Length: 413
Ligand code: TRP
Image (cartoon, rainbow, N blue to C red; front, side, top):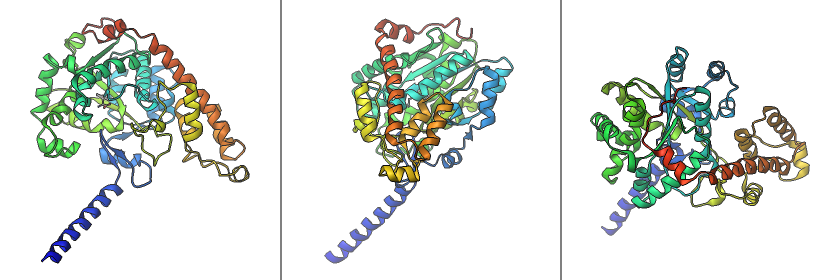
């Protein structure tokens, strides 16, 4: 009898392990978990197919250049923003002289942002500048309160601190409204949340977000909060009388599930579907297989890091595709596919010709890892120092001004 019990249990355990292995061997991407297949890297082509978005190809990048009469942003040229939904429709409308607005956001879960967090904001600033359109930025203090187990007060404090980093990215106050959910949700915004909520079943959110019976009910409704800034009627002080203004959302692709849901509901409640432009994830210093972990400060460069810390992190932790000895390196050259300094330079070194020459020399073994890292340290230190200067110039009054519920009379000028 005891023996049999043991067998049954033993088998159960085995089955559980198998299930777990199966799960681990699949890549998982949702707003809370990003993990590649065992030891591998994220397969973005697969993600495009799985999510049902479109590839942002060269011809679309050229179209943006033509329409804006400006060279495209590095993040477009280098494929950092690599997927989209209905971007063509937004551009068609823009070409006809119709305007749109931008919507992006941040979940304020930590005091200091790392470089990966800056990417959507740097890109959104570019979009705002070249298209000259209004922008709403949502700080989901409620989301982080529920998911990160922060108190309401602490989440609100972090939202305000993060707003300073966002403002430091250079947004135009005459076209930008920043809001925190704990302060702004109500009125038309809340009425839209209820309209959306009536069209999404528990089964549906469970399938999209993986909620289970163990999740508290606050989480289940949260997707409506992130959905409704996609609708202009949620901001009557900005868009009154422009109920059909289109919305374009720049974000990292892990946010796609929220907007799949939003786009599904929009026509059912008489609204336009928001369009999306979506980025890759920013790799950790340890490389593709390593996970960017909040508990490991050495896996990322923070906007609060000093030049000395940046130098130390890059030299010690940035995964190198160079060979193990100088002789081998001169002979075989670097493997650029796995090299983190090259990846980071691809995000942040503007000069195409210089990047190309570094890639060529490094790949051929004529340039050493230490030399590439040295250049990366310069580029990152400059970026971070510039950010720190801009952030220290952001006053409490400026935060209040960006977050004031007010009309923006010149937002399309
Ligand atoms: N959920 C996002 C995060 O955790 C924050 C967010 C809210 C957002 N609205 C958005 C991100 C719109 C991109 C676009 O960071």
